[in-house]
Image (cartoon, rainbow, N blue to C red):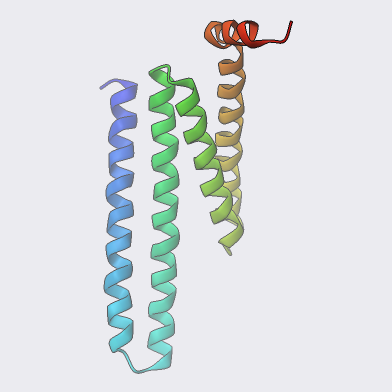
Length: 140
């Protein structure tokens, strides 16, 4: 299996996981509404929040995997935008998490994605097509 196929499979798996976490949130929300005990409601709320956060993590990973695929296809600008979106998603989750370990892992993903976005931006600026356009439209 090629590296691109692995990334495509990974992206599909994260999409499926995000969908499953979304479904779990719906089911848990319906169950919470049927429970009368405050302690049980609070426990279900914790599971709903965990499902929401994990769903958002999966969507961030989908963006990261899609960015890698676009990168390999030579779609520099689209890849840059996906890396940037992934970085934003991981940073948002980072600010919401209580766990130091999770925060460190999310920060690493955010920094990697941001760096790749900046690298794609630099590569786009240096592309022959962009250079030609800059020369064509520069003031004389």
